[in-house]
Image 1 (cartoon, one colour):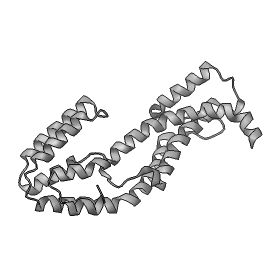
Image 2 (cartoon, one colour; image 1 turned 135 degrees about the vertical axis):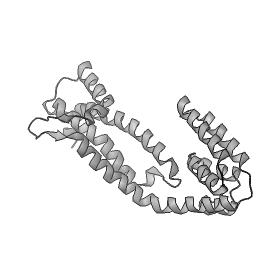
Image 3 (tube, one colour; image 1 turned 30 degrees about the vertical axis):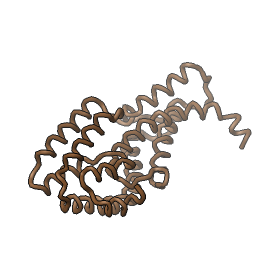
Image 4 (tube, rainbow, N blue to C red; image 1 turned 90 degrees about the vertical axis):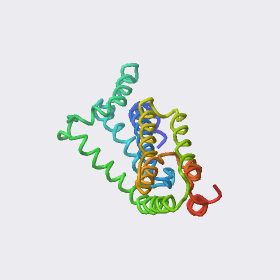
Length: 226
């Protein structure tokens, strides 16, 4: 094993670069999409690890085959540049049909989407039911509350304004959604709008619920000792 690593290690490191670049971009997108899954803990999710493996292995493996690293080309700036460019341009590669030596033409996008969909289904299988129960309970709790929701709207306006991960356009869209939610009626429609606005990070969700008048019973049921 050690001899194999000493023989191929340098080329494996080069091949890993596209995978690392792709997973860095993909994980940020996934976590944004999963903001409404309050109990999603990626490191404890088998589906997440399978998803992460695919996001790393597919671009790394494709680069190995396309550049034919099996022939152990010189590891120079040109090769590093190819690895960097492939990693950064992997989305473009997904929209192409790529010829790989000794293999039939591969529809990369179709294969990639099929595997990633399976991995996402594994994540959803562990999250959908508990997430639906949680948001149903939040809806019922806020509808029964006598709060006027002003404190909650103020909190969310500041929250999204101070979130450095959001672009200026994203911040503006959140502020517009808050304005619409404030004007929504009847109350059940306003609660629905609030529920859709609660795209805060999991540790911040208990505070956001309190600001909207959520009951401590609800909060402690789902977030004990918060």
